[in-house]
Length: 430
Image (tube, rainbow, N blue to C red; front, side, top):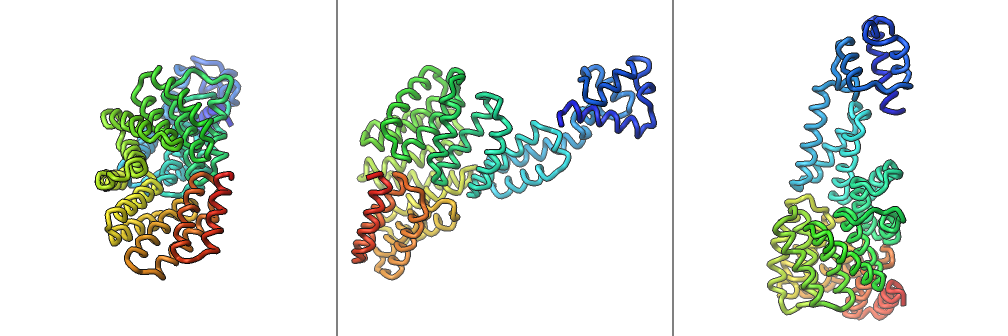
């Protein structure tokens, strides 16, 4: 039913409640046939006519247009603002509850813009709370609703979130398909900040999937588009994800330079969540490219972990930071602190992120081994292999299996070692 039909139905319902005929409502400014056409949804009243009818029916214009009173509209808008504020402040469970309450309110049904804002916010809160399946379900519904809209800002933002959720869940083919559907469209408009961000999200999916040739080519295209736009948002998104590709292709120093450029711009202009996520990505690069600077990396991770926990970052981001911090503690000879951080990472994760869960179990197993707690170490390593077996084959899963193979070797488990290495090769496509 269209909004035009709903307006007509509301006018008809209130007219009848007032005991008026169509002719009585119309006289003297309008014809009764015109009122009849409006009520049947065959004619769209002008704003002036709507205001006139609201006066004659003794109801608010807001109610005629939206089906809610001005007071109800103000209450819904305030509820949406409170939910957004909770999400921005990192109160993800509270934000999700507030968005769910809004969507359960029948008053929002006819308010398309408010309802879409609430659904998108609920999807983001679901992602942040670790419920990727729910987030993906809602985002797909929103994408279907925007199917004919072209590359609008809203549709692009939904696509960014949906591709990111698919990537986090390990559905790399779907993560790529979401981005390519818009960016590969022949009718795609000129580059915008939103499209560069979508391109950066697609670039990340290429990298994780191991499609490094395509990733390198697309990274150059994306950097050129961002430089042409010259906006901080586009430059940060392109440089951040191009840095990841550079690292994956063995260009460590170039990766650091690109990440530092993105970090410098984001520090001046960006919002806290993305700044913290960028610091996390930068710390991961430092750990890989400059292993001797582990003390500096640890300090950065401690700061980043605190910022992520206080922002609208997802539980996956916070857990990833905790797992990396555990590795830094281990490298510095602090196995007790490594155990604490690895357990914190485990507590944040559910069954939808097997690769990340495996990483937390692997580092915890290593920490136990450094403490001489061999039985507990073996339990964690076996659990890590169980989680890796549930992961979709990818470059990330290959690294996990390689590490698991090393751990099984230290356990003198030859069969487990060989099996893990074989699976690492299979995930790498070899």
